[in-house]
Image 1 (cartoon, rainbow, N blue to C red):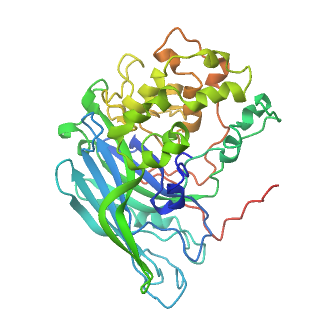
Image 2 (cartoon, rainbow, N blue to C red):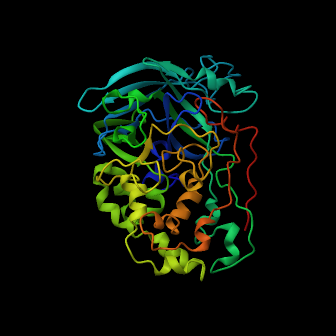
Image 3 (tube, rainbow, N blue to C red):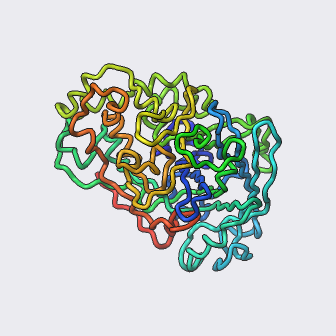
Length: 459
């Protein structure tokens, strides 16, 4: 969760596994947009000697659609290269690393950033960009926070980029939710009840690998406009990320390496949080990861009749009688997740991308950053938050739980009265990792291997 282990096959290939996607108007520079794609989920900080790193054999991409047909109009592409400086040691670092370029960093990575417009060849913006080491510990990577500034690189056209390990900003009570849909704050109301308790952030102390890029709004919009009208179709973009591998590979037993061949094929993708995780059934999850958003109408049935909406009244008897009795297709969820919210639903707002049903994170670029952000986004009266794009602090678990439970049905069906509990649902967690930064790349300092302590297993 959000998309950390969402499908059987990609859970076996974490280096290519999309964990989260974020898209928001930069709060400290509203003329720009920040796009973030996280990969390699659930990283134990002390995972040496082979610490986590991007895959040299993976094509990482962040796609932007601005014409309403769910086809990428602009894509940013990232390819990585790993170097082993001293092949005769098992060590990740042969001494303290005080700067990214230090020779004591024995397994450095560099990368190239490309920009591809629809129908055109990829243009390489810059190559040879450095990736910081992971947070090994105070002796190996002293004063780790300074690596963040070293790893933020300027690109042509007023863009900037970062790629490297960060603290996971997503938070969710994974242990509770997947134990038959338990929400600790409400577990006294569960079919198998126990005393209500505070939520436990299952991502606490864990890291991810982040690709973040900040670009002018005009880099992403149709015809390069600078959007100012919230109600204009040209102010809305759709965002998703992919990780792709070449279609075939053969093992060289003599060299102990893979030989890769053929075109790239997506093996993981992500737009809205929790889409493949919770909406798509188990039998379809791997196929969903491999098809483009233009094919998502075949999955619309799982959005308009979500399994979780049927489970909530069963797991919490008597709590959701109105939801249990509602049999109409969920047009509210189809708007939020597949088309964007059309004008006339939320006063003064829309992020509608047209009738093409596709899982895209939709962002209206004309909505300015909020001066008082609500973690509940639009449900909290904050039009700059999810599902208008997604910010790092948005409580997407609570937002989507409340939507699935019926809080958003009256937006499209005024005859429906939500159950009282629908607007209260949450898993009781918050970000318990490093604090978010005030400036790009915004994600907090990753947990260190030496500094971290393993959890206490329970029977």
